[in-house]
Length: 111
Image 1 (cartoon, rainbow, N blue to C red):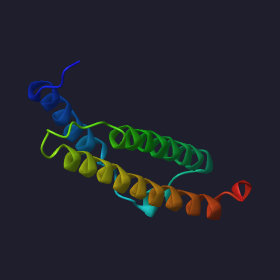
Image 2: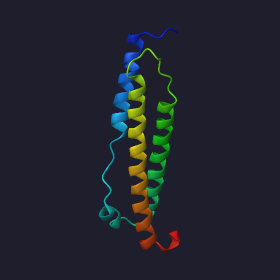
Image 3: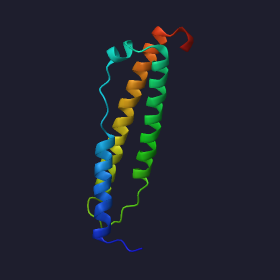
């Protein structure tokens, strides 16, 4: 398979859009978790863990993408997308910590 600028351009556009879409997360609001019961908090922890795993897999795929050396800016795009995914993982981990702290206070069986 021969790499041409017309074949690589759609890939870079996809990476930019995928990275941009996946970097949106809800704000971390502990008040939101105060209204949840214990099973809902457990589900929220599981959902957040799934999102962290999914984002880490996507970040790994982006980081392992082979960019041709003749494609100017390709490595920079790859780095930007990987950094967005890293930032999203950090936000999700903070969100998960807030959920776990709320669950620890309100659910005696989770300790």
